[in-house]
Image (tube, rainbow, N blue to C red; front, side, top):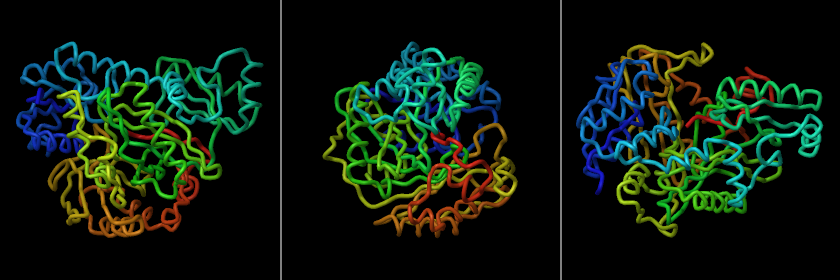
Length: 462
C-alpha cells in the first residue's frame, strides 16, 4: 500500500476502532493525543503517540497545525480524522494535502459543497435526490415574496441555516404571523453561530423518522451498503441506530439507495459517506437532509449486516485510489442494533458524569460487539464528548436483535460514574420502539415530555 504510517487525529472509541483496522492491514500507527489522553486505551494500542497540546480540544484535537506537524515529525504518510473534531473541515483537509500527506476522506471541495446546506440541496436536486418542498436554495426576495413562498409550501415549516448542522440553526414556524420575525431571528443566529446569514425554507414533517444510506466511492465506482434508521434521538443527538431501516416501503428503500449513489457519483465521491433523509411515514416519502462526508458513529451496524470493514475500505481507497467492491458484492445478512453509552446522568437532566470508572463489564459473544475507548480504572475527563462506548448486536431479524440488545444492556455494568444504560434499556424494551412507531422527537415529546411537541429535530450527531 502507498500508505505505510497513519496518523489518527482523534480520541476515544473511534481512535481505537481506526487503530485496530489500520494495524490489521499492516500499517504503522501514530496517535495524536492531548495531555489528558496520554494514558488512554487508544494511546496504549498505537505504535507511537504524539502529544499535540493541552487537554482543551481547541488547543489539541482542533489544532490543525499541531496535528500536521505531528504527522510530519513521526514520518506519517496519511491522516485519518475519524468523526467530529476536524473530520469535515475542508481547510484542515487541504492543509494535510499541502503538507504532502494523504487525507483519508473525500476531496476538500466535496466537503465544502456538502457543508453548505443550500449548495448541497442544489446538488441533491441535480442528482435526482428527493427533497422537501421549500425555497430550493437560499431564501431571497422581499417580505412579500417570502410570505408568498411560505403559503405555497404550507405550514408548519422550518427556517434552516445554510451553514448549520448537528440540529443547530433550525427554527420552526407554525403560523404566518410568526414567519418574518422568525426569518430575521434565524438569519441573526446563523450569522452569530456560523458566520453566514444565509437561510432556506422547507416544509416541516411531523413525527418524522431519520433514515440514511451508507455510500462508498473511489471517484469512478460508486455503491451503497444499505440503509439505517437513527430515529431514536434526544435533542437531535442519536441514541440508538439500526440496520436496515425497519418498516420502510420497498419503493422508498430503493429510491433512497439509488439516489444516494447518484449523489455520490455527481460529486465524484471518494471514501465512505452518508446521505441522510427525513422519512414521512404518513406520506411514505423520504426527502434529503444532508450528506455527511466522513465515517459515521453508527457505522458498525452496517458492518455487521454487510461484513464490510468500512475503515479498511477508507484506508484502501485513500492509499490505492480504488475499491475492489462492486454493488453485486454487497450481501445483506440479518439485523443489527447499536446503543450509544454516554457518561451522563439521565436523572439529572443528562448532566455529564465525569469521574473514575471503578467497574466495567461488557457482554461477550459472537453476536455482540463493543466499540469502547475506556477501561476499568480510567478517568472520564470533562473536556470532551461524553460518549464512552457503543454496544452493537446482530441477529437474524429485528425482533431477535432488539431482544438481544435488551439482554446485552442488562449484562453491561459501569460503576463509579453515571451512564445512560438505564435509559437505553427503557428505550429498546418500549413497545413503541418494537412497533416502529417512534420518531425523532418521540423521546422528548412522549417518553420524557421535557420539551414542547413539534420542536424540530432533523439534524443529528456524527
